[in-house]
Image (cartoon, rainbow, N blue to C red):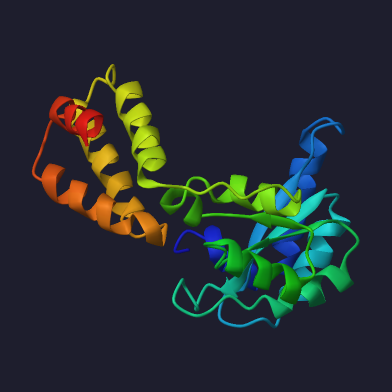
Length: 215
């Protein structure tokens, strides 16, 4: 923001328009161009001007994190704003913000009226959420995600990191994801937290991987 990039651009709808226009002109027509924004910087005064400018610049879709920059991540997402945005443009509007489980997805879908959704932090805390949403929308049985499935996924990630040059950095990444899993799917929080307590003092990847294999 200090250098005139990031969320501060939300105070300059015309500049956002020019950025998206330059991108649209720089890539072949068959390559989709999208933009992702928040509702605004301090307030929502510019929101509709921004999305209309993005559409006019030739973007194929716009993703909206339904908070202002001032809201950060603490304030509830304002999904009702997504309906206003959908009415203002003809391109697809992708809903983002506070979708962290199936009930919140359903609430977002109902309030926003959107057909498309983006999952951010929740995709790390709850890696099977997108699959469950797809199953629900398709009328399939929603898969139960037990700790064994979460652990197996984390083990796969850990094993993929074995050839990383910075093994301490790799260990930190695995522990970081494990810590996030402990705050994700409610049914698995306790198991993830228990394992995190076992590995949090480890500095190398190998003992962490070994614990994941036997946990």
